[in-house]
Length: 116
Image (cartoon, rainbow, N blue to C red; front, side, top):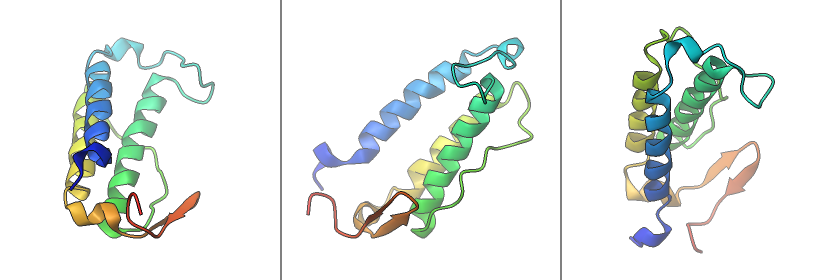
């Protein structure tokens, strides 16, 4: 496998950086607004964890799952919820063969292997 084109390396780095930011958010700030008017910080975190779960579902089944914001996360549980989503995403895409499987999502279809 050519690791220079392996998207899992960049994904792990990006989600790791975001995990560190999430872990630093104090619970009393979760109701604060974000630049996106539809989300406060809590809503944004729910959306981000939902995105990890949706990405994992594609790796697990080859089919997209509707991105659904997670619910019922305690205010002090966002870092753990995000880490669980990161772990699920990494596990879902751990098999190198999955990087070359055909994938159809609402915004695109990939039928050929990476770099082909």
